[in-house]
Length: 286
Ligand code: SF4
Image (cartoon, rainbow, N blue to C red):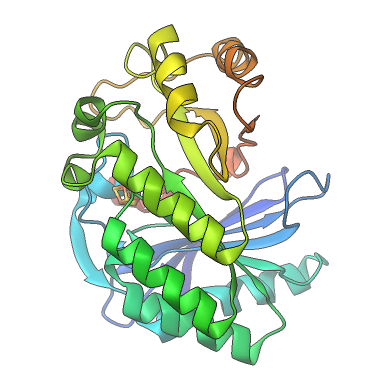
């Protein structure tokens, strides 16, 4: 695994473009939370696939299509690259690995769970987080793995919609799983593992940012062991989708926070093209 490109930002993030043996490339992000504002303070965000088959309309990786799964060793290798970087930069030991880079980790769940076991077995890293577009049967399978192996893993569900129709437009591949079904699976995961799952909701101008969305989100999330994380669309100029402004995010947050456990997402890595697929895409273009 070779470092083909590396960008370090002043916000404590560093992004790597890594070359694999078959000449494909993946992206990996290291984040040092100097302000101690996040759950984990020294984190690696790994890719689980080259490209991605889910094809979310807002995502640069999705637009590049699926190429192949990463092996457990290639996932572990990304952690090793970041560990060398953080040691050289004088950052604290890595405390968590987040599966939120390129790819849908639950479409490569065999290698992802093998990588988690390898990381937990061969390093001092004990925290894991996994972001998914919401593959219901795979979330249920992951619940069994986490409980059996006693792994500390938080689920991060990319919701981004309040109706099945709206979600089918943004994340077409997951349309066989309705919004309620994926929230049920995430809630069951959280209850079974004693965690609070994160529900990511990215505001896209004129698509999912209305008062009606706030009403539906409140009804969908109230009383569940889920925490809503609100952000603005990280503008990749994809498919004509537009971000909302910071004040719109604050307004959405202030209208929903009394009824739903929620927070605003801290956009780490924006200076280093932190959105998934952006570094790889930038290199292709240049
Ligand atoms: S957001 Fe994630 S699941 Fe969706 S296309 Fe991009 S990499 Fe795949």
